[in-house]
Image (cartoon, rainbow, N blue to C red; front, side):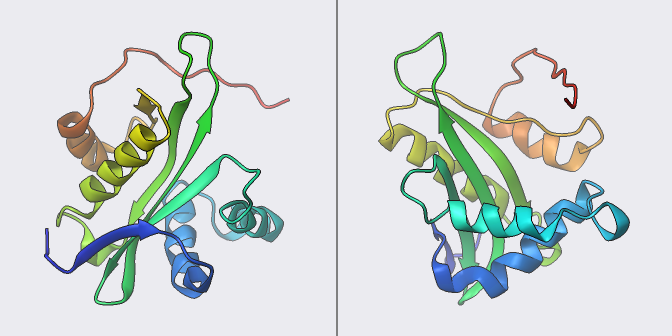
Length: 153
């Protein structure tokens, strides 16, 4: 990891650099072209980061003034603890930043935010084909053993 790497909360003037990272993240998961997210979803996601009533937060990775990664996370209640759980929803680094510790630093940033919020658990999911990311995840966390089921309603 470079000494110039800085993990920080997102700022309103980051939008122009955040958007290509967000688009890259979505493209990785097949949400581009005809299957792209509705622009209203992107606009709402962006606005939630700055709304004090929303439990959604964002950190960015910056090197020499350029954003090279993002992570979005949220806090929610649960039935097995008093404090909130922290769900790391999105994690993405630019292709040029991969393999340089940016993803690990972003995850550590979420861990710190969770500790400050009184959360004792951070969790996330990834697609079973995301083998590169899983190599990192296996180093910084443990698999829960749970599978995700879902149904669009």
